[in-house]
Image (cartoon, rainbow over all chains, first blue to last red; front, side, top):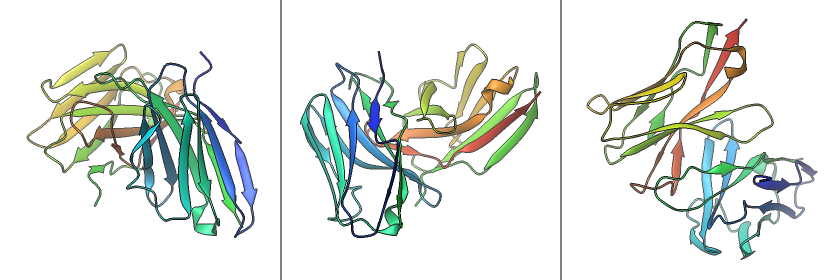
Length: 114
Length: 114
């Protein structure tokens, strides 16, 4: 089991550019979560998918943020246009939504917007 | 509004001694709690959990205690080992009984000195 795979590990971009973060969940998991970690706000949930369908996107900060899950093995988080305040570590997590099964996190993408 | 609070940003203990990490919550609807451990440049990994119907859950060197009247939980690590040095997050799901929409504390950095 390779775990949750995120790419890239690091992304440095200039303000105004489009950024796409990618995630491959654990095979067989039916739920996928995107979290963002900052010093000020800690870990906060951005959006959650169940069976590839977005269930709750109330944590997405602005319309500049969008997420898709075209199939059970792939999800993207896009920021367009990016701003310096978007700099953070973005984590993807997956789980088999069954009882209290825990989230399995990827190693994150560290985004720096200059 | 921080519903899950970890008031100690850091804790340092000697190898072999007990580590006690604390967490307070404000939402009385929380009925399940989790602890995650995070090493640098990695995603959080699930450590241990507790349901509100219990006041203690033990797994090897790790024990979580829940005091519902005080809205307080703690993680005890005995004996502490240098490999336990990490950031520990307390978390609770907003929707009872599942890991949907976890709210995380801001974490406590534990350093175990050899």
